[in-house]
Amino acid sequence: MYQTVYHRASSVDEAVSLFSKSSEAKFLAGGQTLLPVMKQRLASPSDVIDLGKIKELQGVELSGDVLTIKAGTTYFDIMQNADVKKAIPAIAYLTSVLGDPAVRYRGTIGGSIANNDPAADYPAALLALGATVKTNKRSIAADDFFQGLFTTALEDGEIITAVSFPVPAKAGYEKMRHPASRFALTGVFVAQTKSGEIRVAATGASESGVMRVPAIETAVKANWSPSAIDSVSIPASNLLADIHGTAEYRANLIKVMAQRAVAAAG
Amino acid sequence: MSTVKLTVNGKAVAVDVEDRTLLVQLLRDHLNLTGTHVGCDTSQCGACVVHMDGKAVKSCTMLVGQADGASITTIEGIAKGDELHPMQAAFRDNHGLQCGYCTPGMIMSAIDIVHRYGGQLDEATVRHELEGNICRCTGYHNIVKAVLDAAGRMKVSQAAE
Image 1: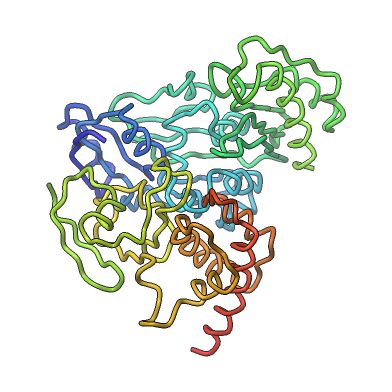
Image 2: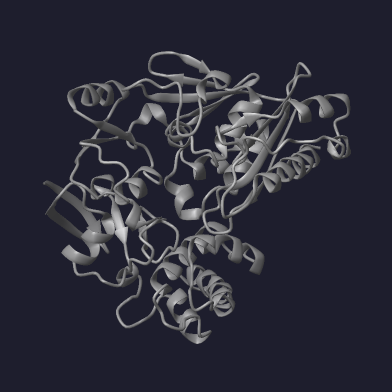
């Protein structure tokens, strides 16, 4: 990788201050994406500002009907957390099939959503659950946060501090895993909120990143069962097509993964 | 350049390195601990796995600054003198390696798996948990046997301590 200057921040304020003094800095969370990208020389930040030791970015809180996961919490700590398992077991499951054990010890939820890889798992959970992204400056609804491939509403120097999930009545996630990268070839997160709203989000499928799937939402609202999705038709237009699968294949995967996710949600 | 201080296999180490140095480069190029391998260099193969503060991590995907102050254990640090670690002994006894390139990472990941699951391991769990370690000889069958064997031995040796 190119030369860079490493800084370790001990607070969010210090990280913001370090960022403002650098010419082209990047925040480093777990590094499981940023470092490979730097090694490929696709990113060459003048400075990397390590957020990994900031205590205020660590931990999980369950308060009434809101589960809050601080941005620097690792996948391992999320999947092991008793409150996560109790309140939204679908998030614990999603996390357990993400990456591999060594990656899960280091990667963080904040890092994942800030990167917004079109095949990452967490964006589907945030969008389907109607989560709120908290930053050092503001709160952003998941509907407004994800803005296309590797693009989010974050401004320069803005740091995600936490993600708040309303606890749903039911939720489930299933994905077809890419056998080498473990990213989602297509993954679908289904949720029924406590007020009865149905939200379904697919990742790994669309050319513009994570997306809602209204046709499946309508079908499942009428009848919460996998068979309700049998007759849904998902158009292949604007879906990803690559060596791993055609757009038509991914359109079918959206249906199949949604059916499995509904079954998993119970 | 920065001075990085950490503990490697129980010994305190202080090294002046460029900030872009990866933990695996520090281990191999600066400390001559070449048992930790670089396979894919893209965080997928697991040949570079070491323990940082007791957790199995990919040392090719960590800057030395992130490991500053940590305790690192490599494949060179797990035997007691001439006595192999139970996981190493199980790999030898079960022929859990062919070319041996992936073996250091396999062993470091496998020890972490046994620590997390204790005696609750079965074949399916071992296979799922080893997803981050790739053996290109495709020798997984004996690797899985070795891990299950070692899980029993480690339980016995922990009970004996």
